[in-house]
Length: 283
Image: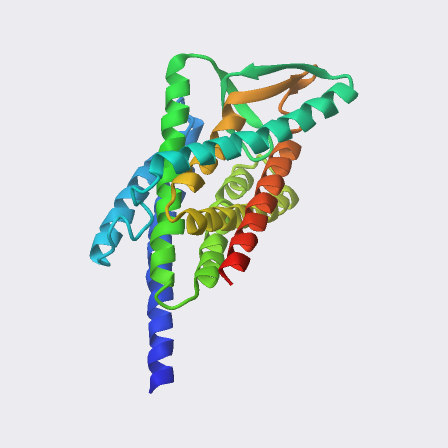
């Protein structure tokens, strides 16, 4: 009987998480394939993120979770945000420096430029310099960060901890976070702008990297006790590639994949090392 109750509880926990995930994913599909807001002058798929925030708080209320329990405590919030921003900027300074050095060694480096573009897996699209587009980019990414951290590292983590250990729950939520990001290349294939092989390669790349990045944010959340450092780092990750561009003689951001890979690898290793160190101290 005890084993049966345990299995039923495990099933209920997973079904709850998966149901919320599918609901959010349904709105994501609607925006990417029907509304296509990110392909308009807005440049951001923001509608399903706003709906996701509403789902986050409605689900939390129904499950009787406080905002503190889903990671939005006020303790050290400003300090943690600043630490996250500083950390994200720091690793991207390293990444941009490597990218510039490569371009210089190839004799193709032209300049660093600031303008707003839309991220498109392996390149940036668009070149906007009006203040409005900078505001939209920043606000859109704040909404994105709030929704994704609240859902994946907050709500899902809280639900999963009812059955799983913290590390197991983080792995499950991070895998879901990985699949959350594969919609771009799938849409490109459906639109005929990429091949089947290109889609598969990009799906695998995004699935692996987004899962690892999600796990990094989960570690930051556990170490700091709230979402704010992860949100700061997440914001930099999403925003800087849309604002600061490496321009060469033949185009812009041609080595963006290298830049992002370096930044994410360095940040993941640093956070993992610190996480292991703190767990070792706790015994």
